[in-house]
Length: 137
Image 1: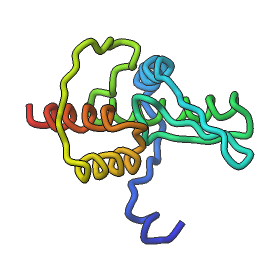
Image 2: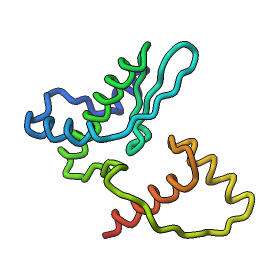
Image 3: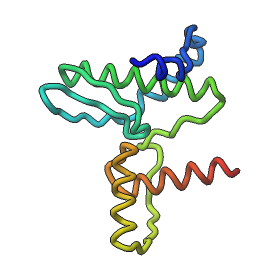
Image 4: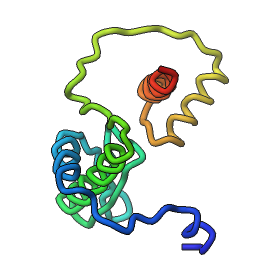
């Protein structure tokens, strides 16, 4: 890793509080993991936290590694006083809105969704909109 990048990150030099870590494990255990197989290796990412990823040689090792990464991400959010995302299974989405877009707008949103680890525009727009709304409150 380049020195500039290594120096730009805050390095965690202590363990998480055990109670906080236990809480993070309980939350992360309920998150869904999406697996993808490519070039002889499995890649996993969290559905609720699509930028949290890991890999493994087998599906089981990939799920364990991804779950550990999710636990660390949730523990970090909790330590910072931020609310981690609710497990997808907690919220049944029953409402729908329709938004008309130009073809160019749709392409831009699709590209942005992929760039941020989302599989579709709907999840991307919902996540970004709700994050913006929550930050304004």
